[in-house]
Image (cartoon, rainbow, N blue to C red; front, side, top):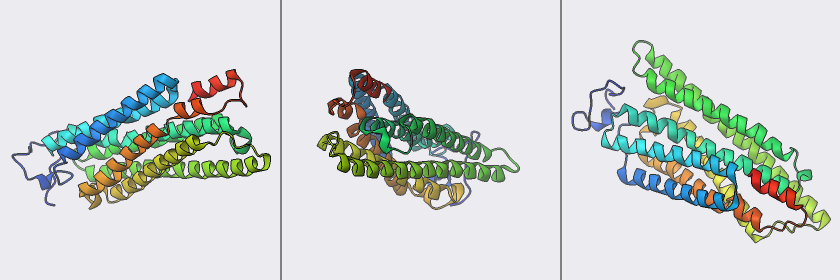
Length: 300
């Protein structure tokens, strides 16, 4: 790449400057970004329908916030298709597409707490409500780091002398946020696997595994798929930003489509299948009082 034309005062347009001098060095695919925008909209509407039916308000808030971020973010990339030098389009997509998966992670964290509460808190090393109180704040820390890092790195590129150093600091902060998100997910996965092992061992000893029917196993399988996709995406974004805005990965649209867009689309549709409402609503409730069951459903 040659000289990069970038910033709010940049006069370049699609018809006045070569595309390879834009920050990404390419014109984002209108087809891919339109498809992603449509798919996130469809998934969000499914989540809204399920949540109103099953009254899973906490899960709904997290999923809608995530989907709205993705929709706005891919609208920003469509702005970059219209003009690869659009500073507004760049800011919109870098912030919103970065934020979206953190909200999906929050929905997953909340769901595990409900699974633990439903199957048996005695098998968990943490009380069910602690999953919410530990992992949601971690999500907020990750969001803050990624947001502040992305904002600093994108705005510093136009601030004159010393802007290069500021931009690198911003990238480093964003990477720290992504790394913290990966660490949080890794700890969460370890605790989830530990709970699953302890529950399996305990249910074998007691002969009581009535709540883990086929529907529940499908639910857990798709929930696990969503976690894996988000985990892969975060690792990719760390690698992508490791060389700042000048590295090879950030200029590779195919990798972005596959490891950002496709991974998160799979995750949100996996969470449609792993929506807690239909599963918990269909599972046996003989071990719970009506009041306790309503608490389980209402807090998801």
